[in-house]
Length: 362
Image (cartoon, rainbow, N blue to C red):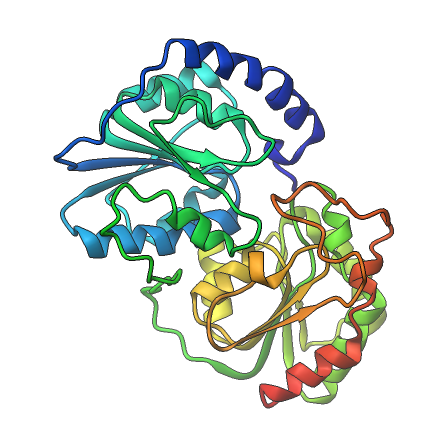
């Protein structure tokens, strides 16, 4: 289900109310110097699973630099479960992102030395950052977003680097080495089941249907995997379940096909991913989760570039559409291409995916 952050109405409110509010707040803002003694850091996240997982690499860098520094992670309930699995922090605090007064009250009840806003474009996060009880504020200076006025340090956000390395620019010290990849050391004994494959066909966010690969292509992949005697699990949210029922209706309750969309928690999904020989996914949060868990992975990219949003584990393979206007996404909502028929995803052939599946011994 698309969260509020992905809705067009929220983007319009965020822009036409957020920008003037930040401009006014900047009039009352005075740039501060970084505290010499940093014991506590607050990090305000965004309600997106992929971003939270990528942020893990940055948190691991901070902990390597100073294991004693306390990291407080502020998250919405939408992503709290994945944050709990992720680790690399000392305390997690839930906030009501779309209840501003309550959110500000929660933030101010946790004073920190450094407060980091990890949102790439939302002005609401910047407004919260202004009112946080912190000695030093860090956030992104993103082209065209006008949200950087109130930070003591604004890191240049780039559309030419992987988002992990944009997050690493939010560092409060040049001595923090940007060397850690997102890694979730899942505390669960799970044996990899040979010939078990997870498929994730649905993406979230604004105009997510443009990231969808045609069902007929998925059916060719299913046919191939069934011929190879594979058990296939289909993950997704509760709202994805109905679409998967339609996708699988011609398979007459094949016992090797398992539609678990909406039935598993994120923790249970992580166990399923870790225990599978291969994961095949469009570019979405589950893809990043599989990457951080170290799964064998094939990711399909149409509107998004693997160099910006792709998996980072060494045993992953990315397939990028050859459509001339692809990729067209930077922050996740622009879709600057003229075509709105999802042609870029259609250009990825099932033959190419099957070829990559064979590379994993299936």
